[in-house]
Structure formats: C-alpha cells, structure tokens
Length: 96
Image (cartoon, rainbow, N blue to C red; front, side):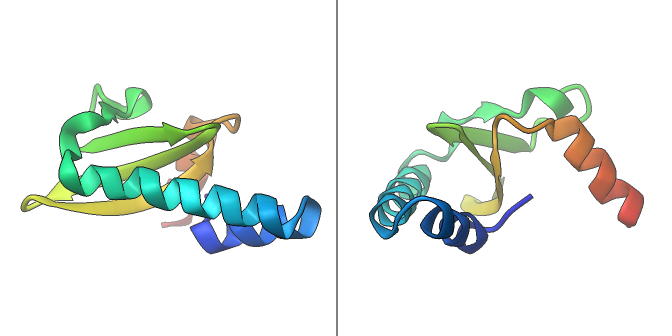
C-alpha cells in the first residue's frame, strides 16, 4: 500500500518527471471529483460482504480507496490495481 508521494517518486525515478507529474495531476483530479459526488465510487468488492463503508474509484490501474465520514471524503489508500488487494489487506491486519 502506497502513498501518493511514494507512487510519484517511484514513477519519476523509473520513468520520467513528466510522467510523474501527469499521474499526480490525474489522480488529484480524480479524487477532487469525489468531493462533488462522493458516492460515485463502487463498494470495494473484496470486503463488501463485511462492510459497505469503503468505496473506490480508479485512475488507470490505480485504485483510490476512500470512506465517507459525516459527508466528508477521506482518502485511505492508493494502490496498484494489479496487486492482490486481499493479500495486502491480510498483511496489514497481521501487523496490527
């Protein structure tokens, strides 16, 4: 699970500054749309049997997972959609 800064740093290091800037700008624009229409994202399918409070939207292959709290959107994590989300979640829970 990565922060936006970690993602952008990785892209800049492995691709280019322009690509990093474009990804950053597009992810920020995608998240800003959530503040206008917070329920636009789907419920995260891997955990929908347990809770419907976590939603997600995508930018290319990035999953932007968020929660709505008192009509406010809280971005929780941004992960590569090609990764095994259930495995990442399991690893995080084991560390608690």
